[in-house]
Picture (spheres, rainbow over the protein chains, first blue to last red):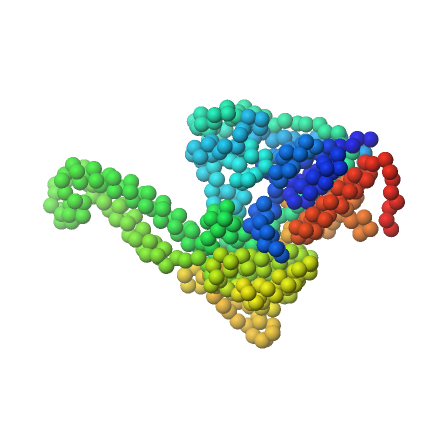
Length: 55
Length: 449
């Protein structure tokens, strides 16, 4: 059994999954199609319902 | 984002694609194509000197085409990794022209025009598909005239206009006005160039161009090639100056957008496109209206929708606060048509279902709350992963195990699963991480049913 994990997509969902697994001690490979991670959330200015900064 | 970039247990492969997956749960072998950036990742410091000098301007996809970037670029300012990338479609050097300015500028010697794609083999026990979504393209809805009327924009485009790091620095300048300002800039450059040529003639003959032209028109000169050239140049110069003046006069009246209309369910809850509710758009529009009013206190917004679905912790209170404190009016009704009014103002035609009347209203800008559509490459990726997609194009899951795809060992979360907002995506992501960890641990848990 291989203990490493592949996460496809570097948006908010992929980032959260990767960080959770990495904190549990698993080795994670994150593959993102675009030159930088962040996904759609990085394009947002603020988020609801608290108007916090998205980045 | 930053944590992902520097976590010792995460290997980040940006600008890459999964090409092949074989094996089974607990033992997958995966082929990943790491596309050539033409920039060495271990050398690039992300300083951006190359992008300052690059001569090729390209429409900026991160800013939804509202601004420009260069052919060598970082996807966005705070992007992780900060490694720059050369766009092979537009780079002069990669298209056989003479350039290489970035290579000369780069102090880290990171530019490598001969770089090729690398294919990497990975051995993993579980896979999480978190491929997200695509913003629905509303140009296929003829009655909303997106792309025809410049001041009709999508919610994400509006978000970039609101953002301090966006193309307008957070000012709500209208796209139609921005286009005219760009045209003025281009005409000014042209006028300056022709003025320089006229200056040369004026110096040579010691006479001002308008006076000379007047005489030339009266045939006071004999046929002379040089003088004819001068007259032609003056003619062309006046041809630029006329439209430039009228555009400048128009631009004097430009201000930021203060009357906003938000149209809900564009592409979603619509049987022509996607019958499902995209779930986050109601709140997204309210948020944008509140932020716009924070930027400019006189801003008023009207949100046109069949109903406002404020389902979530603190959402209903947020909606009411928007109405009471941020100048938002909620109108129950579906917008039938958007037409072009005076001064590039869009006019919204709608049915007010509470008053039983068809009305129209003029706005500075219209924002379309576009649907959450399945990601463009999802079909191909599902084929590579050997998993199924559902009738709408999102990944197929079972209600009793909502994070498991149709193949054991492959999980999903976020908008690859279906439309959802950010907090929900985060909850699912942690859930999918737990599911993946569970099958890789030595303990086997009972399937919930």
